[in-house]
Image (cartoon, rainbow, N blue to C red; front, side, top):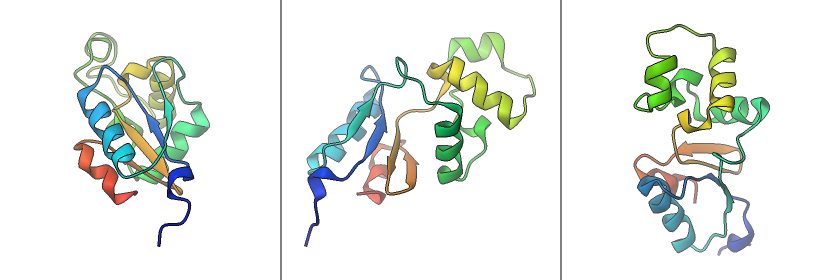
Amino acid sequence: MSMGKSTDQITIWHNPRCKKSRETLKIIEDAGHIPHVRKYLQDPPSERELASVLKQLEIQPKDLIRTNEKVYKEEFKGKEFSDHEWISIMIHNPKLIERPVVTHNGKSIIGRPPENVKTLL
C-alpha cells in the first residue's frame, strides 16, 4: 500500500539543460511523485544544505565537483582546497556541482546514471 506517495517531499537539484537531470526527473514523475524542483544554478544551496547532502551521499566535497567544466579547468584544477573551501567554491560556482542530486527522507543520491534515483523511490 502506498502512503501519500504523490506528496512525499523529494527534492531534485535540477538543470533543465542537462539530459541526465531531465531523465532523472522523468523517472521520479513516472513513479507518481511530485518533486520539489530546485534550479540550483539560479538558487544555489547554502553551505549547510550542501554539507548535509555531502554527508548523506557519504562523499568528500571534491567528489561532487564537475571537473570537465571550464571554470574548474581555468581556476581550480590541480589546486588543493579544504573540504570547507570546496563547499564554498561550489556555492559560488554552482555549475561545478554534479547533477542531478536528489534528496528524499534524509537520503541523497546523484542521478548518474538516472536509474540511481530508484533507490529513493
